[in-house]
Image (cartoon, rainbow, N blue to C red; front, side, top):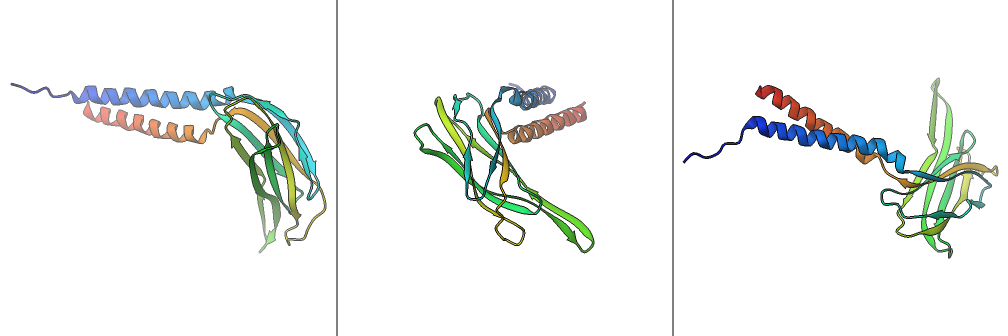
Length: 193
């Protein structure tokens, strides 16, 4: 009685096909993910130290894929640092989410060379399972110069709210992984021939 031996060529063809399909799926997800996003609001808030401002209440619906993403870009003057808190509250005023961020922009000359440091962007993702109205507010907690001295000038924040946002970093990792498997499968197949 002879036993059946799988053909190496057909197995490598299967691996090429499977990894190739996975690579195409990852590429399609990466390309299509921005298409399902819905911009709900974009607004610039100018806020004095120890004060707060809020966007108009936003009506959201649960997204099958993705989350509610709040992106905030602080715009302090050069050589200023700001600490601020973002709060998301429901229609009853209950706190849904909050985050504190330090942002700033600093530059100067040291040993004859110019240097600069900026950290201006922040984001907050929230997954909602029901239709609801949310209010997003930003409060300036602290505004200082590089020496840590309080500054009394207001700070601007660009706040954008998107529903159905997907974190594409995972798609890039998946595309790299499946693409590598496809390339490896093709290389092994070429050595068999």
